[in-house]
Length: 134
Image 1 (tube, rainbow, N blue to C red):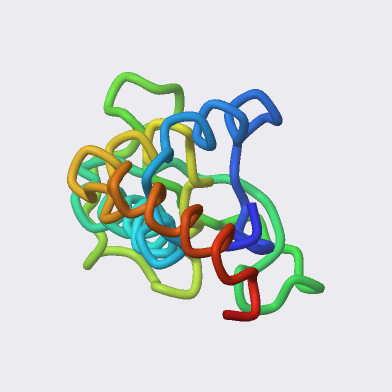
Image 2: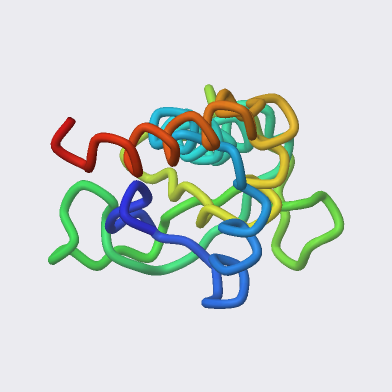
């Protein structure tokens, strides 16, 4: 939750709990990589989209300016879908999709944990022997 910051997402509390359970053995650095990969899924969605639909909303770079001609990637069968490629759209009008739980699951498939049970056991033993300060 800390790493995702203010990035728009569709994750629920239950999703965060499930991700925490799935990330056993992941270091803080591993989790940072997973989050960055999940955030990149929105970029990949825009880059590979074959259809976009119009929507009204604030400009991504100027949240106080409301416009009627924003474009968001969508599936070809969704209402209002227009066949377009990213290169055909004004970049200031593209709205990235929210990060989804599935983006994190996909990122975790390619980012493996770097902390083993043996590492955790050694850390606990060290802490018990020498305290947190060392």
